[in-house]
Image 1 (cartoon, rainbow, N blue to C red):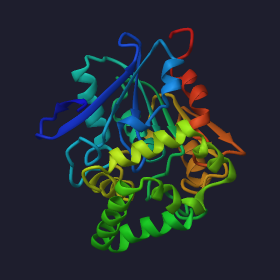
Image 2: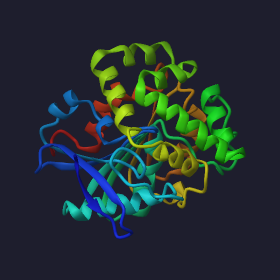
Image 3: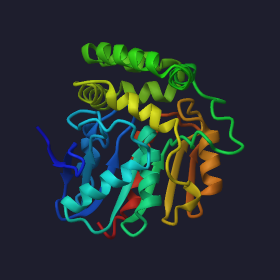
Image 4: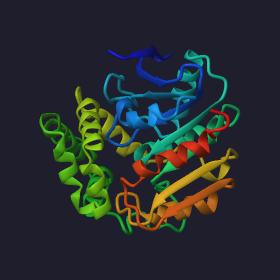
Length: 291
C-alpha cells in the first residue's frame, strides 16, 4: 500500500516517491486513465540522481478516493496538500496527456510555489475560442468524449465495462486506441520496458473502479476553473505533430495564449513520443547543473 494523506474533506490521496529524497522536487501528473506508477520510466529516474520525483493517484484512480464533480482546477488543491505534507516550498510540475491540463492548473493557481511547468500532449479547454475542438482527433477519442457530453449516464456505464475488461487484460486499452497511433507510437509501446509500465499502470489505475477515468473525461470537457492565459510561470509545451489523441491544434492554441510558453513541436512524433522526449523535458524543468 503506498503512502498518502487524508484531505480536509476526508478523501484519501495516495502518494509515491522515487529518486533523491533531498533532490529538486518534481510533481508528476499521470495520464488518462493512469496512476502514480505510470509517470516516468525507472531508467529515467535512475539517470536523474538529483531529482525527487513525486506522484499521486488523481481522485478515483488506484488507491485514491473519488472526488465527485471535480474540475481540472482541483488538481492545484491536491498538489498543494501533497507539497504541504512533504514540506515542499517550491517545486516543478510535469503532466502528460490527460495530466497536462492538471499541470497547467498548478502553474495557474499556485504561482508562488510552481517554479516551472511542463505540459506534454495537452488538450485545450473545451470552450477554447476559435478552436474546432474535435478536428484531427482519432475516432475512438471523439466517440468517447461525444458520448460523455450527450449521454453521461450511458458514457459512465460504457467506461465501467471497458475498465472491467482492461482489469482482466490491460492490453485491450492499447488495442482500443490503435486507430490513433502512428507507426512510431507502435514502435515505442512495443518496447518491453514501456509496454510493461503501461500495462501495469492501466491495471493499477482501474483496479478498484472506473471513477477516475469517468471523472477525468468529465473534468476535461467542463469548464477547467482557470484561464491558461493567466499563467505567469514558465511553461514548456511539448507536442507531437502526428498526435491524433491530442490534436496539434490544441497545442497551437495553448502556445498562442500562455504568456511564457516555450512551445516544442516534434514533426515526426505521435502521442507516445512524449516518453522519448522526457529526458529533454526534465533537463528543462531541472537543469543538470542544479541537479
